[in-house]
Length: 177
Image (cartoon, rainbow, N blue to C red; front, side):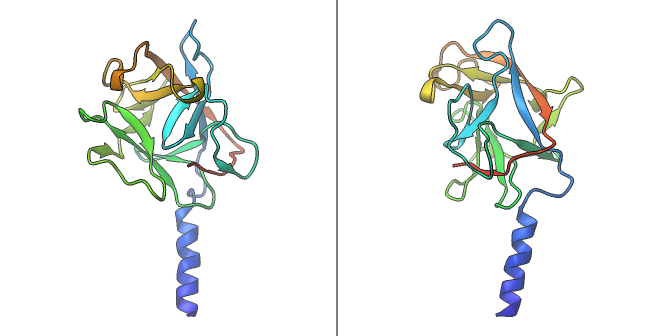
């Protein structure tokens, strides 16, 4: 019994964000557009700009997705929960879908977990490419996609944007639904 309890306690500590992790937020840069200076949010397994409320379970006030990189893998920041890893599905079905894993969601068949980096200009990119946002998503938000397909999933009016990294020295721990 003691071994099981200790093992579970140790497992829980290894699942949180690694110590000395540089957490960051993302701000969209696209001059003269409705998404210029918009914060990246996470909800319902996807990412958005201009989402009024992300409905995450947070240890404080937070309406933006806080992230961290571990090598070329991207995670949503949490100091206690199992890490929620970000994936991209560039297949014909996914068309650049960016999502994240939850306790109930599994990695899509063609989901990729590696390939994220920060450029010298401070932009978050996937395999060297910036992201795009498409209007008319949930609650009037813009859905965020990898820049692989023009107007993914039948969306219209999508805009490429520079996802600028903003260091977050006091990240709020969240679990995203």
